[in-house]
Length: 173
Image 1 (cartoon, rainbow, N blue to C red):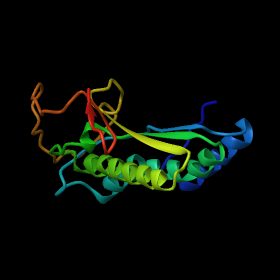
Image 2 (image 1 turned 120 degrees about the vertical axis):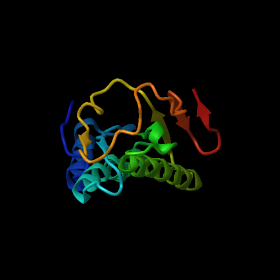
Image 3 (image 1 turned 180 degrees about the horizontal axis):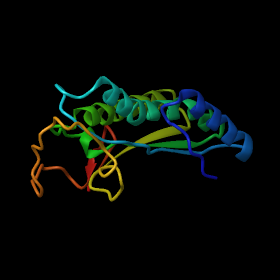
Image 4 (image 1 turned 180 degrees about the vertical axis):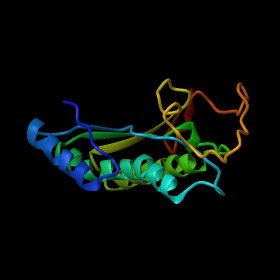
């Protein structure tokens, strides 16, 4: 089944989690992969744009994890995959809002994973940091018109194509 909902709407996510278990009996996997983009400098970005991005890219992950965690534990085995970004590993000019959210996903996921390990939970967490994936996120990004373009086409930013991070054993592919 496909559900269309606003991941920043906490109540909608909790309702969807409960409905998923009611319909399917249990949940074993959760993939948090919603995201939007914003091109804006810290000095000129609007509070509205900043909150819009963080509410979706960070709070969407938090809402999803919290809404489904109990259901995943009830299933006897579960796994959460939180999609961050290479921008959760490196900072980029005009991407500070995106960096806030994606570094936040990384920190939240690492802390949650450790908490679950300490509790000997049957649920584990993986954070994925993709880069350069063909989606519409860049084309549909909000752009602050007062932000100058500092990144030139083809400029090497030293960003790996894909990184999967678990605190003990970072792996870069």
